[in-house]
Image (tube, rainbow, N blue to C red; front, side, top):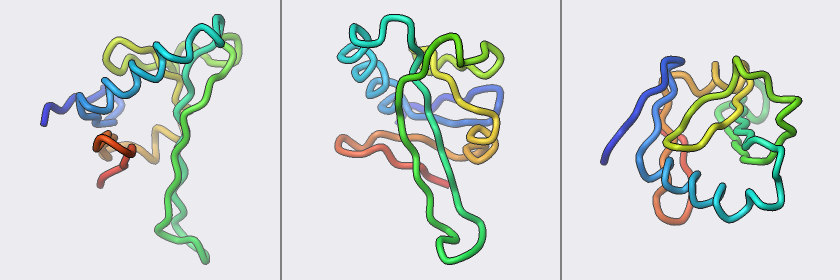
Length: 103
């Protein structure tokens, strides 16, 4: 497995980068001025402690500050600083069916 690391600490597999590029290539024509937005939430306390969710959506390029845009493979992705903090030292991987976040 080939791994990559962003300066922010996010680790991702080449399989995830390939998945992201595929999704981008399929959907980009419907989102001409938009940027992919990766969001991640992990609960630390309460009834949902230990559970985590991620989602990949499109956001207007005007709403995605360039300081929070990251290059994953060939694709520019906006990741809010709070989501990036939660993903620090975690790995994003595509296993062929699903995207998984590994500790």
